[in-house]
Image 1 (cartoon, rainbow, N blue to C red):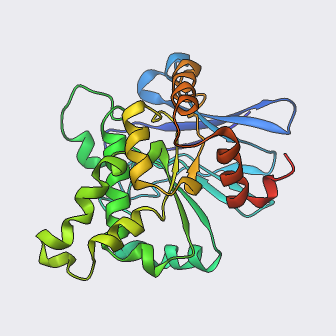
Image 2: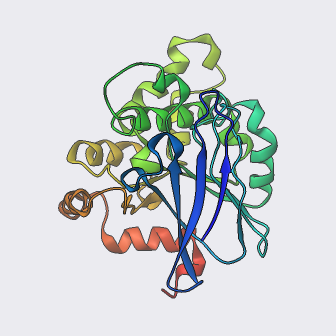
Length: 274
């Protein structure tokens, strides 16, 4: 077992970061424990990142929010994996010019970028007695998608393939409203209604915790059926939730299991033989 700690939060909460090696050294599971809970097992947060002996834990404040972020550097691949404590860099979402150098590098590599929400500082300050995954996560994804569209980033970095988690948050429902923006606000006069709708259809949408009947109906109008992907959010999401979404997808005319697989293979050709 290896562990490292980071303490950059004003309150003094320390993140201890350790790897429990499972199935010898080929696979591992990363966990996060907080000192505020006296490292008790009931607050272990499972990251889900597969570990290897080449991994080195390097926690630090990578997003500038004053909290230590779990992070791993793989000495063999040179890759960094960071589990950020916020969904943004400070309060900036993807599409903000601060991210342009990163998006330019990803665009040059024809990258696939999976956009998954987390707890934004503004959401945490609301004081609502609701877990952020319930409402704030879908809204954070919506903000990212809208910002990518109206900042022009989606067109400037057109080689990036963006996957929106949870069927895009509220984007399927708000797609028509977004397309009305050029008629309402002078700031969007560079867009047309048709172009906004076309840009929405450039996103990929994955189904984790989102394949409800109403969402499926909205997606049929807003999304490109060849850009729909299957997702589960397992192990964080109970299998019963995934099963309910599976039943909705199976009963709908939106897509099929064969089509979802074809979409995935088209996006990730190396998976064709699996």
